[in-house]
Amino acid sequence: MPRFLTLIRVDEKNVPAEGPSPELMERMGKLLEEITKAGVMLDTAGLTPTSDGSRVTWEGGKLSVTDGPFTESKEVIGGYSISQCKDKAEAIEWTKRFLSTHEDYWTITAEVRQIAKD
Image (cartoon, rainbow, N blue to C red; front, side, top):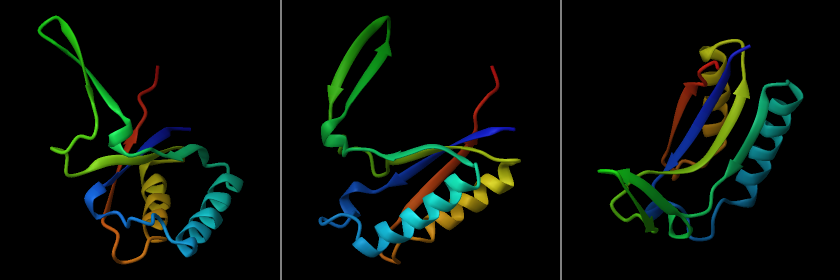
């Protein structure tokens, strides 16, 4: 059965300062429990802000490390999931349900990509 990586992209400048609401966390928790019980969810997590991250770049035969925050990035990866679904359509359906748990003031984009087989 194919596996899919879903990257959750957010605009860090427009995320509520207090973080996700308790109601959102409850809705999200219920959905994640459902996805897990269905045998679809393999792993998921949110990520710390880019201010805590670093970028490692290989260019021109040299390595460089840049510490966050990455102010030039409008959208950053705020979380991810790895799921095992029968097809891409199912992965997209679960992703749509996840995004719909958020209140209207959130702006979130999810990128769903199949993980290449070894």
